[in-house]
Every structure is written in C-alpha cells, then in structure tokens.
Amino acid sequence: MNDYDKAYGADSDYFGHASAPLLERFTHILKPHGRVLDIGVGQGRNALPLAAAGMRVTGIDPSAEAIAQTGRLALEAGLTLELRQGGVLDFAPDELFDTVLCFGLLQILSRPEINELFRRIRDWSAPDSILLLVAWHENDPSREKYQGIWEPVGRHSFRSPDGTHRTYLAHGEILDLAKGWEVLHHEESMGPGHSHGDGAEHWHGNVEFVARRV
Image 1 (tube, rainbow, N blue to C red):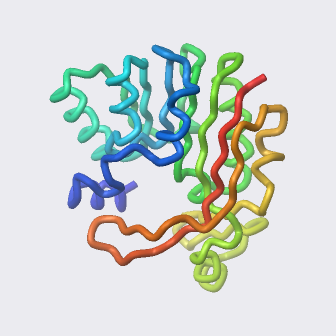
Image 2: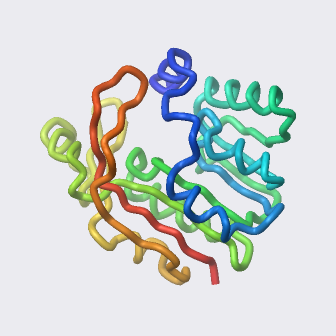
C-alpha cells in the first residue's frame, strides 16, 4: 500500500470528500443506527458522514496513512469510528453488519480473492443487510493497457511482476458473484470523467450494485 500512503500523504482530498454518488442515492434504505463496514475506508469520505448520521462504522484499509487521516478527521468532528489497518481478507469481525460498502476494491484483487471476499461478505452480513458495491467492468479503458503489459491470470485479470492485480468483471458477472442476494440496483456504464490529486482526467467502466441479503 505504499502507493496509496504516498498519494494520501500528498493530497488530503485524493478521492474527494463527498460521499460516493451510489451511497448518496441509497443512504435512505440503510438501517438507522445500524452497524456499517466500510471496506477500503480511505480518507473517510463515506465513513464519516454515516457516523455523523448515527451509524456505528468500522473502516478497514491496508494504508496506514488512510487510517491516520480518517482517525484525525473523526476526532476533530467528535465522531466515533472503529478503524483497523489491514487487508480485508485478514479481517475477523466480532459482530454482523447491517451495511457493507465495497467501493473500488475488486479491481485490485485476484479472482480467487474476489470469490473469497463475497463468501466473507455474506458471512459478515446480518439478515436484510445492504451491500453497496462499485467495481470495473470489462470495457474499462484501462483494460487494454494492462492486458498488453501484465501476465494474464484469469478471465479479464492480469498480474504485474510484483504481484499487483487488475481484474475486470464480465458484464453481468456481479449477479453470479452475489447470487442469492435480492438485487435492488444494478447498472453497468461508463462513469463520469474525474481525476485524483493532480492526475489527468480519466474514465472507468463502472459496475454499480446494491443488494439485500435474504
């Protein structure tokens, strides 16, 4: 996570401080005062507003800088967050969650890790809990780049020499990964142009998914 540590250290607003648009659209269906797991909490743009709304939020992230910055912002705002540094597959919660957020994670996991993550999300989720997820699909503009320079290690999945992954979901694949959940929203499109820090404007092929555990 050294790259994210550097990125967050150089820009305290790397991904922006506004909540993810998908979360803003569906906050109204979340359980009031429920327990939330934010996988990849980053600089707290989703976790902090939910905590301010009275939800009990646990944020996990491999980046030490992410955890430090989010912790400082929570302290300054008088909010209580449970923050844990580490990878999602090393996480072992002691309670079930009413909401799970998974934004921008799947593309850096291998296919076996993605399958394991969905198994664990189900195990971590209370009945009627809500999953909100954003991933990249196979028409993401960056796929052509990675398939030309990295080793293919699965369907639309590539690995660099240092073990970094880029994985793109096939169209409709999210429905198989979350089989058994009640689908509330599923959209696959090209997302809006945006930039991170002082980087160039770019676009992603977004998979938006909201579902209820039944």
